[in-house]
Each structure stands twice: as structure tokens, then as C-alpha cells.
Image (cartoon, rainbow, N blue to C red; front, side):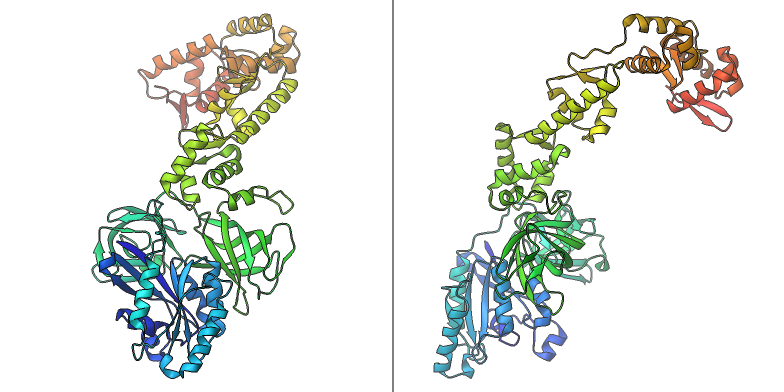
Length: 623
């Protein structure tokens, strides 16, 4: 069955809820105060079914009062088509204009103009109002849309309106059911015997009973206990449906309008968004760093506007900008948003989210990637985003959560980019070829500098190199292997062709001398004097030999030979085979040495996780 969401729009008391009731038989005003005052305060919902056409329309009825536009915005995000409602006795009013502007900013693509309360005016006056409505919508998505004059009181043309709605709804492009599941929460309540329930319009994907989901931005992980759609129990619901989700183990107080129920493990929250912002033609100018109300989906927060390339944006103008949000939101590249003035409350403009996890940039930095993120195809946008992630890369799951698209389409685009050599893949991590070239340049530059300052060392330890370059530990080794002019030996990285300024005869001399001393090797300065080698040069040689594994470093001034270390380990194993612990004095006597050597060696063994100190004794950790 095709599922479509229809929304109402228009000024307060222009008959939006009455039209919904006349079309469906359902009164969308559910609150006691709404019924007492005769106005819509919060979102109302109803269904309009066309069984013969396999069509079910969910209706979202929004309030028309200027102070309740934020509630209207909470219901407008998932709308496919709109009824622009204008009362015949009043004509175009302020919220008529603001609601139309909001629908235009959200890029709702279809709808009808409905003139209500026709029973209250003369035919000639009705014709004038209908002409005024046609002029009113010129230059918007409703230009050329049908105009239907109705009366909820007498039933005039309600049947015609129902048919016109059906005809337009059948042409609506379905929402992406193969995307990740996203449901912006517009209501939270509890049902006796069921627990906490949230409702909303599913923007994409599907969800099933017993499926694991996540509530963001709080990060609550829960399971779908039950589903209802359009008043019926369902095992699975789809994008485009009004959906009620019964969440397991979650309290009502933990949830609120503006939350998002999503596929678990795919999305992250953000407090910064790169966007294309467009101001309304009758808006006030917006200066960079000014604050606004920011509406996305059903969420609302205050945000600071950082304009790129200009200090001020005038009415009707457009610019790339970044919004820095006071509270985290969930967004995908391709989402629409609306901004409103802090005071007085009025709509300023809106636009398109280009990047929901933008790279750090100063205002004077380049924004060459933003036109590509705005207008590029799916391949170009993915490539640009992964490129912006630099050497950190981006997982495929993150790409799926970042971009508003069908998951199979994202997979196909990634495979094409891998085949073209634009991206490299390391398990689930994607890296752009530009990032690899950046890594290559940084690595070779670092090695040249290292070799210049450490001529006696063959190279740098792999772990130290990774830390210096701040590279992902899961892909660092693979990236190093891909760099042609780099060599790796025993976890030591060097430039190919480089040879350390340490002779084999020097190494052999040091090793032979240390082997003759056991664990009672002299301090480095004493060793330098004994061998006639400068202390700094000896320090470099000892580090190289320790990295190569021919000697063991106890500390920067104390090295022992590998035979001495291995012999010591053998003695310890034999001791602990029949003893639970060992004192310092016991170790001293066991090794036939003095406290001067026993203490630093024991500290080295503790640091190496060979032994562990428990009070005044040591126990063996090494198996």
C-alpha cells in the first residue's frame, strides 16, 4: 500500500481542523483546551483511506497561531503534500504567509489551495478570494495548484476535495524504505499495560517488532516492543507512515519531542552543521555570529550563524554557513531546516544541510568542498566527505548515517569509488587517495627529519611513528606497507636505502662487553668511558640495539645483554615453581648480586609485567 503524509497549513481559525474532520470523520483536536477554545494548539492526526487505490493518507493538522509556529514546524518535516487553507471571510492573513514560506523552505513539492467557510460569503466575494489565493502562491511550489472552495458546515465540495487529494497523493514520490530508519518524535505518552509510546512520521527505512533501536541525542538503547500505524497493530512499518513505537524499558520522562528513534549504531549527534542558508525576501538581514531559533525535524534549539564569505546576509540572499547549536541534534546531509528570529518570533529563512559532521575550518579557510556537497551526485558527495575525514578515514556505517540516501545506493557508490581508486578500504574503514598522499608526505617528511637528528638509529619504532602522525592504529601498518619508499624491519620504520651510522663492530664490542657483566652491567656513562665512546653516541647505539632486540633496556642508563635477561627469567621461573613470592633480598641472593642492581632490575620486571609488587614481595605474572 502507498503511504503519503498530508499536512494542513494556514492562519488560526481558518478551518483546518474542520476540513480534516469533514474529510475523515476524525476530530484532530485531541486536547481538552483545544475543544474548549475551538483552536488547534498542538499537532493533531487523522487518516484518509482509499482502499481501491491501495492508498492511505496520514494527515497532520497543525496549529495556526503565530505563537505556535514551532508546533507547526514539528509536524511539517515529514509532509509530502499540503492543504493551504484560507478562510473565505478573511482571506490571506499573516500565518497564511508564514506557513506558505515554511512549506516552501522545506521543499514540499505538491498541494492544493482550499478556500473554507464558503457558506459565510457571497459568490462574488468568493471569486475575489480565490483570485487573491492564486496570486498569493505565485513563485512558490503551489503556483498553478488547484483551488477548491469548500464548506465543512454544509459539506459543499468535500467529496471533490477528497478526490483531488487522492489524485495528487498517487503522484507523490515514495520515501526511501531502503534507507536507515529515522523517526522524529512528535508525541510521547504512556499506555496502561504497554508502557512508553512515541509517535512520528517515519522519514526513511523500516522498523520491525523486537528490533534494536536507539534514541538520540540521549543515546538510549532500547527495543521495539510493539508497533501501530494508522490505528492498527503492525509487525513492521515503513517510511512515509505515521508510526507509534512502543519502546521497551524506557520511561516517559526520558523522552521528549525532538528526539529521534533510529537504526542502532549508525547515527551520531552533532552541534555543528555546514549548510546552504536562504533568507526569505521579506526577512530582516542576518549578521554573522547572530543567534536564531533552529528547527530540524521535530527538534528546536538556539544556534549561532557563522556565515562563510560575508559578514551579513540580506533579504532573499543565500550563502554557505555553519550553524553552531546549543543542543545536539541528529541530521543527515540532505535534510531541510528552518530558522526563526529570537524575538519577535518570525521566520527568517531555511535551507539544506550539507554536512552533519563538518571539518574544523576558520572563516578564512576555503569552502571548495561545499558546492560539491550541495550539488554533486552521490559518488561525488561521498568522495568529498571521506576526503574531509583526512587520515582518520570514515567507516561505511558512518557514511550510511551521514547521507540521506538508500543504503544499497550508498553501497554501489562506494564500490564504484573503490574500483576507480578514489577510495581505499581497510576492513570497514574508507580512506580517500588524497588522504593517503597526505599520509605518505607526512611519513616520509617525518622520517627524513628523524634520520637527520638520529644518524646512529636505523629508524623509528612503529608505535612512536603512529603517535606522531596521529594515525588510526587499525590501518597504520597497512598504510605504511603501501608507501613505496619506506622500509619496515622488526617494527622499525625507515626510508629505503638509509643505513644507520653505527658500525657492526661497535655493536659487537658493546654486546660482548655486556654479556660478560650479566645483570651487573655498568651505568651508561661508565660504559662510555670504559669503551671510549662518546656518551650521546653510545646512547643512540644502545637504543638501536634494544629496538633490534640484541640487548634489553632496564632504563635509559642501564642495559643488559639478552643472555643475561633470558638467564634471569629462567631462574625466576624455577624459583616460582616452588615459591609463591619473592622479596628484594631473595632476588638479590638468587641472582648473586647487590641491592644496587637488584632494585632497578625488579622495577623493570614490574614495568614489563613479568612480576607484580604486592606489599613488600613480588609475584610472578609471566606464564
